[in-house]
Every structure is written in C-alpha cells, then in structure tokens.
Image 1 (cartoon, rainbow, N blue to C red):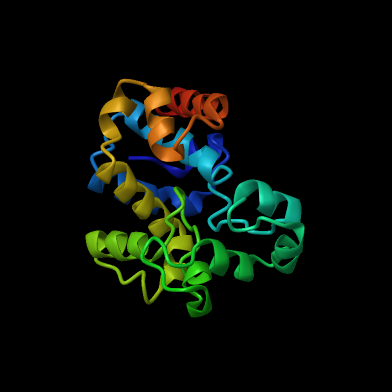
Image 2: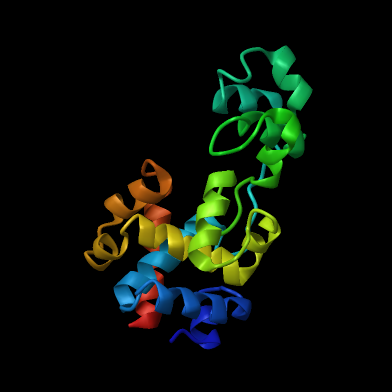
Length: 198
C-alpha cells in the first residue's frame, strides 16, 4: 500500500493516496515495478498529478500545426484561437462517439484524468467498467479518485502490467502516448518512484 510519506517524497499530494491504492488493487498493479511505471507514466501525462484537464488554450499557429485539416488557414484558426470550448467542440466533433460541433460533446468529453480520457465513448466505457456514470458526470474524471481509476482502466484494457514489470519504457510509452514523447522524463519519474517504493 502506498502511503502519504512516499507520495510526499515524489512531490505528489496526499489527496492521491486512496485513489492510487484503489487503482493498484483493482487492476493488479501490485509490484514496485508496475506501480513505479504507472506513477512515472501518469506523472508525465498529468504534470506529476496536478493537471487533470486537457489544456486547450491554443493560439492560431498551434491549431494549424496540430490539426492542419481542421484549421487549414489562419483566417479559420483565428476564429478559434484561445477559446478552449470552441476548439474542443470543433476538433472532437463527430468522432469518438461525440455528436456534431453544435452538441457541445467535444468540450463536455474533453481530455480529463491522469491518462486523458477523451470522447463520449471513452467516458461511457470507463464508466461501465467502474460502475460510475461519467457520461452524465464527466467532471468526476478530474478528481484524484476517478483520475487514477480511469487511468487504471486504460492500463488494464491496454495490458500494460506485463511491459511495466519488464521495465519496457518504450512499449509502455508507445501504448500510452502513441509515440515516445517525453520518454526520458517518464523514465526519470519511474526510476525515482521505484527508489521510493522498493
């Protein structure tokens, strides 16, 4: 069991003790290596357990770089610049189980949690697995308990325990990130966590 002293050494608030312990127990993240990998990967994804909502404060040039098909011109991008609600409703419209831009689903089901749960389908399936209605209460995913549990659900459905126990940073990072962004920081967080947990 994790305790608040261990989290303090990792620079993580004691608010996370219960949620992380529930997550570790429920999803069999039950060795120091698995737990350290989880903490290292999630730590990178959510700024060491401090950022639980997707930051969508993008300026026009960033929008054009991030979503060139949706923002093909500066004129279009300027209409959305620095407007998180409008950006989310546009970029997440009509995909991941979301309805059209006007529905507001993009912003309602924007990325939340330790490993960004995004889109109606993600909220629905995580909620079904955890017995919580995240579709009607999406903001719950921004609380330490459900931010940890939804990350655990992702971890479990993507079978991350085996590569975590094998200390395979590249495989774990690719599954979580889709690439290897932040690989060295993830490794640093995980190795620090392992030294505290072992």
